[in-house]
Length: 428
Image (cartoon, rainbow, N blue to C red; front, side):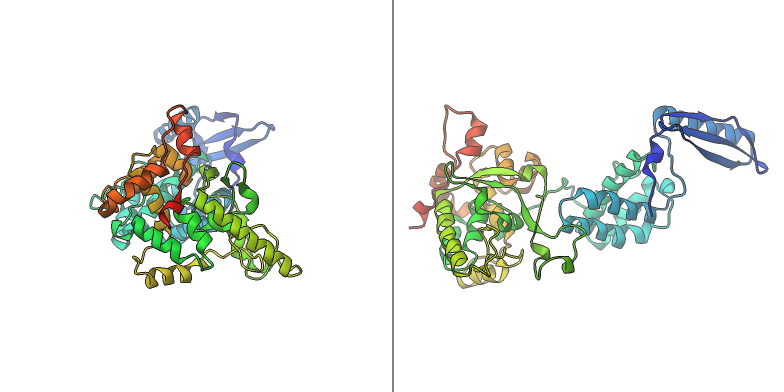
């Protein structure tokens, strides 16, 4: 369903006196627009003149305060589907995020509230929705809460409803309160420094060595790693500018892309703060130079077949890696070397936690990690003081090297620009 969002952009208004409309009492609202058009909305069906006047006074107050609802008789299903397609689809950066929102709307909200009128939804209805979804799954309940808050704020802004019924409504008390966009790390699923060394060395002769380096030693996300190009490297200052990721563009179809390339399209990053420039540790810089030699060799050897797209992590024919390419190699490395069966993302978590253990500035870490707010970094990683506690003595010299002290420079600039990890000292 399409809504004419221009309906809310009236510049003047008038409200008629109460009058008889089809045998009952009512009144009319006249909305005037910049182009001179006037749209009339009729409020009728009141049994008594007193009842109609009370409703008229309320309407006048809403018009004065800017909370007048210009839409009527819109069902939750109609609004939610419109919101996902017109707002979320055009605003989020990835197809995965869009699918998450769409899935929550169609699988969890519409089946319960879809047939209700938007204006009839109460705080009690929202609370019941949260209660039901909490019984189903706490993680789903948290996503439902996020979607309800964002969608209802949009509805208020577009004057589809006058009050946000989801504002201030929390999940049932038995669910521990959790800040938006936070995640807890299982301390049993994080590598120690010794284990990191083993993983780096074991991966040297695998196709994912470069991906592991960019993850555990620079904190890049999976899809950011696949999107890194040689042109993103400043070879003089030894920095990497993160400015894209690979994924599926919204509205794209498999038939519109080359074979097996639909999920390897260049898309914008997760958030504005994800665009960042990072110092490259010497060990990683040397690996990039070696990888470039291999790239040039493959390009000259397979001249007619080589896809010269400049990606650092690519096949022997220049094709970028898929988001799951690393999985079988990574799991095999963990298994063969007696390492904990941790997620790929936990390598990035380990990178961040190493910095936090020495009270590294959370705001600087956020910029290095590409988080939207420093609050996120602290919420996600900051409460794991016991992490890798069995090797604190071993870690300390490593951390001292990771976080050099330059008293003559601005503290934050030092933390962001001069962080260098001399990993070669630990990989002899």
